Each structure stands twice: as C-alpha cells, then as structure tokens.
Amino acid sequence: MTTSARPKIGIIISSIRDNRFADKPAQWIKDIATNTRSDLDFEIVDLRLTVFDLIGLAIAAAMLALLCGRAVRNLRELGRREPPARRR
Image (cartoon, rainbow, N blue to C red; front, side, top):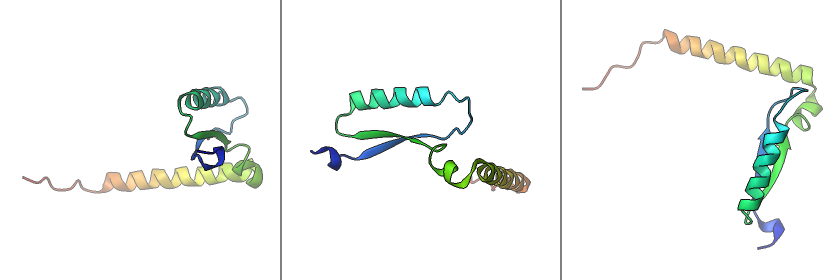
C-alpha cells in the first residue's frame, strides 16, 4: 500500500488559548499512533492555526458564546419537560 493510499486520521487540538498544554499530548498521541499503526497516516489538526486564523479570534469567541448560550437554553427547556412515562 502506498503512502498516499493510506487513510489519514486527524488528531484535533481544539484549544485556542495562548498558554495551552494541548500541543504536547497531541504530539505524544501522534507519535504513539504512528509507531503502532503503519497502515494509517496521522496528522495534527490545530484549530488555532486553521479556522480561527481565518475568521479571527473575536468572531470565534462570539460564536462560542452564542453556542454555549443556546446549549444552556436547551438544557433548561429539557429540565422543564415532564419525564416520559415508565413502561411496565
């Protein structure tokens, strides 16, 4: 099997903080995976260097706040609902 035909697995770093620790464990995971599975290719996908550089951290932070607010509203709505009737 050639290198280009091997499936590629992305190891995603989703933290965008400046003083993050995520780079070290991501590289550690990649090293272990590469040494363990020769039939797969692994790459580190750093969201701080991809998506967030394109749209800007301010917009990303606003989107995250919006999504978190929506999730909280959804959880509150679920809490107001009556639990389903138990089957006997």
